[in-house]
Image (spheres, rainbow, N blue to C red):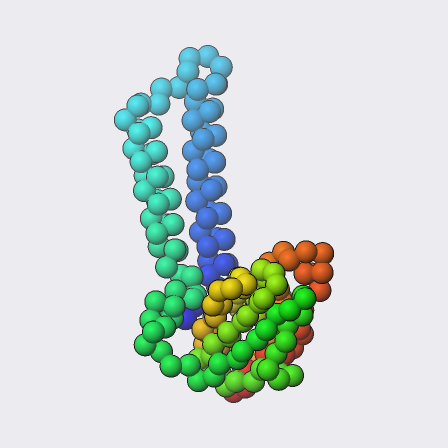
Length: 182
C-alpha cells in the first residue's frame, strides 16, 4: 500500500511540471502571434504535434497516477480478506463513541472501522501526528459504513470528522486514540 503523503507529493510535482510546460507553450504561442512586425511563422503541423503531445502527456499522467490511491487494492479484494480486528463505533450528536478509550492494534494488522450514525451524515478520518490524513470515509445514517485498513507504520493517530455536519462538526476530534504498536 502506498503512503498517501508520498502520493500527494509525487502528484504535486508531476502536475506542477506539466502545468509549467503548458503555460510556457501558451506563452510561446502568444508571443509568436502578437510580436511586432511580421508575425512569426508557426507551422500548423508543428502546432498540432505540440498540442497532441501535451494532450497525450496529460492523459498519461492522469492514468498513471489514478491507480496510486492507497485504498483501492484492499477495497477491490475485501471479500477475500478476514480482518484481524473490527472496531464498532457509533456517532451520535456530534460525538464519536468508541468501544474502548483507545483503539489498539499491531502494525500490519488489517482492521475494520464499522461506524454507525442514526442522526446526521458525518465524516470519519484518521490522521497522523503531522495532521496529514491516513484514510477517511463518509458516515451516512441508515447505511453500512465501514473502512478496512492496514496500518504500515506504528504510531498514534487521531480521529476527526471529515464532513460538514453543522456548526458543532469541527469539534469532533479524538486526539491520540488510535494506537498502532510494533
